[in-house]
Image (cartoon, rainbow, N blue to C red; front, top):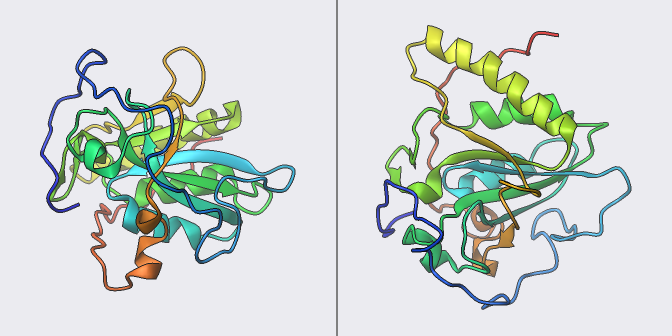
Length: 221
């Protein structure tokens, strides 16, 4: 977003802000559009994935409109600072990227279709930026919670990378990591209330479109 400090290299754990032991602000209970719980509980069989594709305002709006999505939430993930604020994340000193939590019914919206949409909503070749939004907090990432999601992420990435090359784009720079375990992305921290469903609350707000315009093909069986 506007006014952020531009950071083009990842902070190290030693230099990251220390953070805190709990949220510095209240987190809303419900999605302002869908009316569903932001943090669950959700129906049995609900899948959860965390997707980073630049500014989370516009990304969240696109994702909450997909059939089969139960809820979405804006937040921070993939860094080192516990319970960061937006202002802290924008310094580049937390290591987090702006991320959207997506809870969805995989019987309605398959992992593959969700991830194909993810790739086509942004430019995954830009590294630490999306368009004019520059900094490590705008990097592209898929933080998966199930092996099925990981397989779908890798398969759709490879399919899209080949298509992008044919259209003159560079290499895909998207991180694909588990949420949990060694080397995982770590916890998803919910953003402040005014960031949740921002473009519903501020319909004329800042909402850049960074799609490459290239369709993501179905991965090979």
